[in-house]
Length: 78
Length: 273
Image (cartoon, rainbow over all chains, first blue to last red; front, side, top):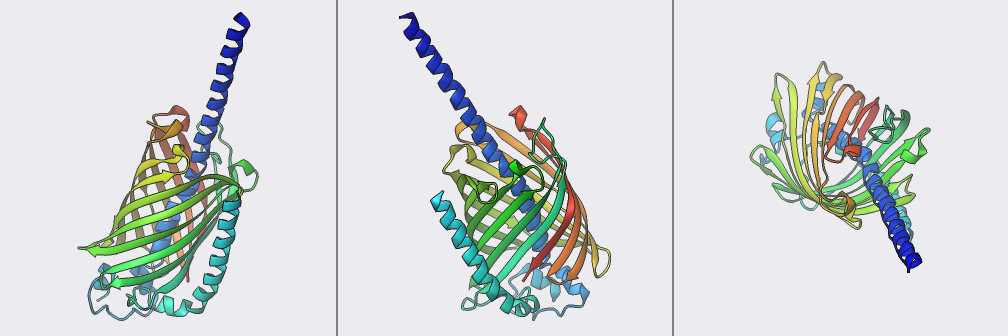
């Protein structure tokens, strides 16, 4: 009887340890994407600037005015 | 694993095919930066960033800080068009890789495809976005999770004394095949660009991110990330720029071991064709 209890306790402890490791691993897995998330966010902000009106100050010909006047950026260039 | 392999092959095929098309129309794209395409003429563009970067915390760890160099590659192929004069759409695929010099266990990569609807409301550009994302440990090696992000965002530009400010706000919920990756998230960012002359400008991109995890071992976890950056940008061409950047990032969390501080330093080559 005692041995059965010991085996049961051992199994529970083993499962507990196993799930703990798994949990930790999964947490880390989610965290591994954090650097890419932050880098990607900064990249997106910089890439969006590639199409900002400041480039038009460096001698580039402005596009034709937007006749429907729908976008903020085109309004600025008029 | 097999599914992830098929996805990578499809992604590479799409990138390769559309890259050629994009190169063919690059001049037209540049000359019509803000051209509003009619519904029948969607445009294809390739947008990306390459950056060799030094970090003082490769694993974003609180206690085990290891510095290293890594190469960040971020490439997107976009298809933009208009459904109505004031309603635009975008389909896109994106691939991002972090490849470390020494700390190979920090290697990371992801691929995604997404769709966006955007509309101008007042001075703001408002958008609804869906993304299906695949995250990997290593370079498309170990599949970490698949995510389905539903997002709403708003942004605008305004200029004060030639300095351009671009506030940005975005909210999302992430569904995932792994419950630990599911969360609500709020992003607040402010892009700042102060031109010095025709070619040079000082740039900064402070942002704040808040995460509320909802599933699995992360249930109840709440993180906040504060990031500031300062850089000097050189406009090589209207569609190519080089920015040297220093970025500091700190994450606070109600889970102690998830806190970290990180500094990244490196040049970024950004391009759009």
